[in-house]
Length: 180
Image (tube, rainbow, N blue to C red; front, top):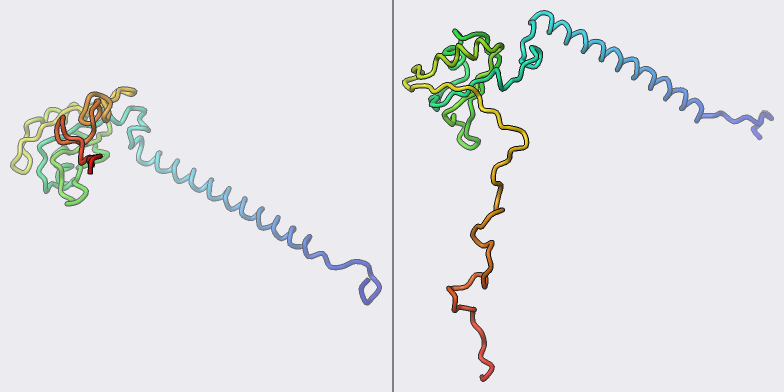
């Protein structure tokens, strides 16, 4: 009993629960607003730029890309984009680089907006870029489920029968003589 004769004690747990429920409700409302904002921005981008990506067009990215070899090692993506600008709209230029040195490996992939641009890019095969003759071909696609030989499945070094790491057939290491 309390000093004034009431049996009721202040219930802090109920107040905390009500406060937590109110906070959860506020967070859910904020999450809903953010979701609506993201959807409106995505819709606005797709309306203003049209179908800018291959996925939006409904085509396969690999069908809309070309492989370019014999690229100068110091070439920049912007320079390649300028060289292929006459072909059509370019979505992306990717020059593969060495992880350690950061220099180009000598080949690149260029993704276009439509198949007509890919056909135009193929016409630039044997064109000169920074003093080198470019080789332009359709990007190769690996067939799903087709794997290479893999690692160490066949007859390889150290996979056959034998005595181990010996020095020829007659060497078995040092064996102590039982007659010492």
